[in-house]
Image (tube, rainbow, N blue to C red; front, top):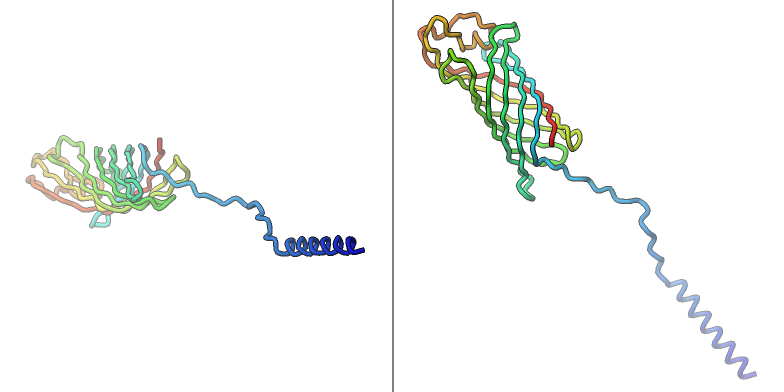
Length: 214
């Protein structure tokens, strides 16, 4: 009888401890069902090439258009997200009314910031105007822009800048006027510098750009 009672006591204590342990046992961690979304960082470094189309407006409210093809290279500086790069461009400026047309060859420097799928940047540049009748004809430009990464290959961009056209007329009767009349008003031949001399003219430029990265 005593032995049976002892067995019952031991069984009771064991069951109580097991039940208590079951109540106090921590819940087993469940595996995470939803995977976390990890954004793939945009790589703005490397070579690229593209096309540009711009609208120019001079101080006298006359307009011209520009077309260009360009190639460049950008390099992101480590973890700073700062992107430095350069571009070479071949362009053509044409009066909207079918007037004067000028071909250009230029270089630009860019400094931008990696904001993910967007890259805001600033630029400065210079271009040579390819015309034998105009001495030291060049364009200096400065402005800001932004590029949007459609994917890891295609970029679309918008720029706003100011271009300064400068040079000197050789003074001959056959020399084309590279004043605002020639660039922005159909090349009327109304020379602002009939005896030759230096000139400088500013124009605002808004450009659309599309590039492919390699």
